[in-house]
Each structure stands twice: as C-alpha cells, then as structure tokens.
Image (tube, rainbow, N blue to C red; front, top):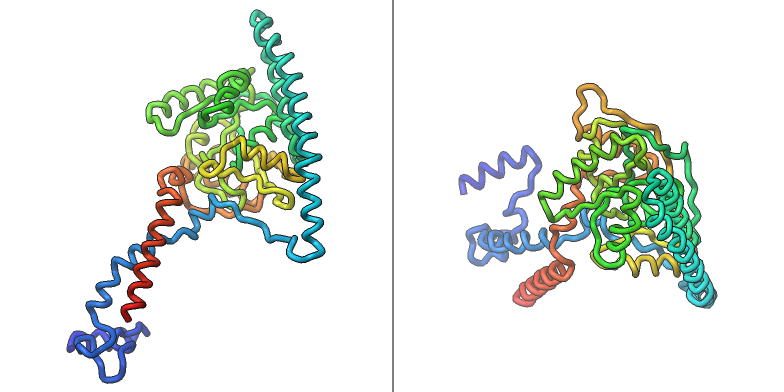
Length: 373
C-alpha cells in the first residue's frame, strides 16, 4: 500500500487517474469484496489485445475501401425516379455501350492484325500505327463509359530520360491516359483476358509487366526500366508508384524505384468525381470484368487529369525524399490525403472473412462476461 500511496502522490501531480478511484467506497485493490480486483485488470489484457487486432476502421484500411455515397432515393417521390434511371441505364445505355465497344474492337482488330503481321520490315511505321490503334481502342473504352475527362496541362511528348508518375485508383487510369498519349506502362501481370491483352496488344507499345510475388522479377524489371527511358523513340514510360489501387481519397507511399532512374519525373494527378460512379477498383472483392460492367451501367465516368510541372532530383536529395516531394505535388493538386502506409501491406493483410470471425469471437467473449456479471 505504501507503493500505491507513492504512485498516488506522483500521479496526482501529473493528473493521472488512480485505479482505486474507480473502486466502491471502502474497497481496495486487495479487498476480496471489491467489485474490481487487480487480477481482473490483468485478465482483460488478452481481450484488449484481441480488440485492437479486430479494429478495421483505421487509416490504412480506409485507403482500400469503397466509400459509398449518401442515398438520394429515400422518399416516395424520388424512388420512382431512381427506378426509372435503373431501367434507362440497364436497358438503353448499357446495350448501346456494348455495341459501341464491339464496333471499336472490330475496327481495332481488323487494322491491328494486318499492321502487326505485314509491317514487320518497317519497324518505325508499324510502331507508329500500333500506337495510334491502341489510342483509338482506349477512346472506344472511354466512350463505352460515357467518359467525361478534362485534361489540364501540356500533352506528354516522346523524349528520352523522362518518366510519368501518377496516383492509382483503377486499371482504367491507364486507359484514360492512354487515349490521349500511348504510354508504355509498368503494371502487375494479370490472369484471364486482361493478361492476354497484356501479352499481345499492350506489349506493342512497350509495356513492362512484373509479378510482385517473385523476388527475382524486380532486378529484371529494373533493368528494363533503365533501358526503356534511354530510348529516344520509345513511348513515354508511365509508372503508378503506389503499386496498388487506392480509393481516390488517399495516397499511400510511393515506391522509390521510379525516382532513382536518373531521369526527369513528370507528375500526373488523377481525380474522379463520384457523382455518377465510384471508379475505385477493389481487386480483392471484384474482378476487372465486373468492374467494367459497373462502369458501363453507370451514367458516366467523370474525372480530371493534370499534367504537372516536371521534377528533377535536387542535390543531396535521396530517392525516398524525391518520391515524397512528388507525392506532395500530386496529393495537393488532386485533393488527396497522404497516409504513411506501404500499399503492398494490402496483400499481406488477413482476409475479410478472417477479420469478421475474430470480431465475432471477440463480441461473444464480451457478451459472456456481461452475462456473468
């Protein structure tokens, strides 16, 4: 008790609460009749640890969650209008958009295949035509979403020793930028029909693929990047240094590799307007096909793209500091909040089912304790 008294005296000076202040009058920590005992406090430490591990609404998780907009069809007057809108989007706009995209693919393939096969002898002409055809196909994709895109700043040009870096919300970032200028993008290798497009059509514009699960792949990709930026005739290189899709409200840490190539970095800020659809692609919950379906059944995809002033490495500045400076520029222009997280942690986090089971377990343990009391 002498120790407790000393603690009370020192704590009173710092205005810290004392454990015994929360006990009933006349009870102490060692009092068997007290409702709160020291062993009770020790006993709940695993529960507190479990509760902390079950918290999901933190600054990291919020970066990778779709933030739903407030519903507007909440009364008897607005609900019929909403139902009418659903019919228009699914029965009129969606079929028309499918037709537009189908026509686009027919035009693209009927031109791309002959160009790719018959003009191998004239490499410069073939690459120029393939670049124009890829831009045309991306225009058809944007048209199939009724895309309303405003571009600000000078159009990117083909120059050696420069790389474009942009914040990343979805794979459609690439399509929106590609319809203006044919970029050679560095991107995660995907399975299915997206992977087929990557290995055939997109490689024609010099795109570079990587697999984040293979450690040896990093060295190969780094060499390809250095070789690409030195080529005077290569398409501009586009990198999404966050390394994963973020929900267009935040920016996570930029990987320093894009800022250690010894070239000029050109920031690109992309900001989507959620008035008609949320363009964020949560790849862990939704396939890219379903993501495209969501876009094609919405009213429109609205966004702004800013091509910002090129940046170079300052004397004495490290690659990490350079990356953070460019992230500041993009975040301010697009109105995004910076968070100090590595986006790759998204792929090492437990699955939602596992988190939900832990939360359920914690809730049941709390209910059992309340019933015992």
